[in-house]
Image 1 (cartoon, rainbow, N blue to C red):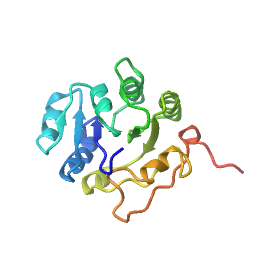
Image 2 (image 1 turned 90 degrees about the vertical axis):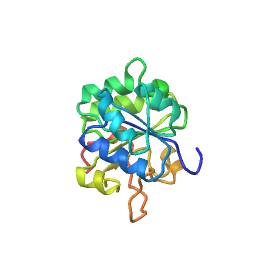
Image 3 (image 1 turned 120 degrees about the vertical axis):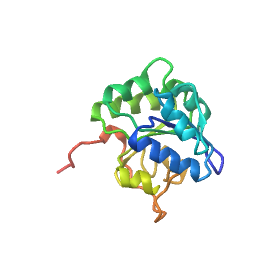
Image 4 (image 1 turned 135 degrees about the vertical axis):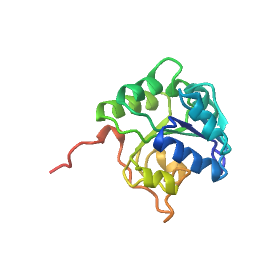
Length: 178
């Protein structure tokens, strides 16, 4: 991965479009995709490149963000034929900002890990998306794991410059140990 990663963004709804536009305006090389081509074109006007598919985004990107509406959509986009996991290169970082169940997060993480791809979940809100700062809720391969290769921060790092606190996705949404 170069000093400035090539970034991809899939899912350009209310939150995704704001996050992707912030990345494009921040000068990142950015490919975007949404099943609604009008949404893809709108973000492309901010400086992103419109991709033909989710897989095409993953093939070109060092870091892929997704913001998708439902767990079934997340599974399809990541795990389906021609999906993100198939297209991602070993060492790439996948950041899912969707609100999904722990089972979906674990399934995506397992499939990505099997291909040498890093997977991180991150929760956000519209203010975070519009302001261009990263959400505080994170889960990943941890500071000592593969996620540390990115210096602990994704391209749209917090304005405070702090690395996120990460937990492996296989422990996502589990209650704390007694």
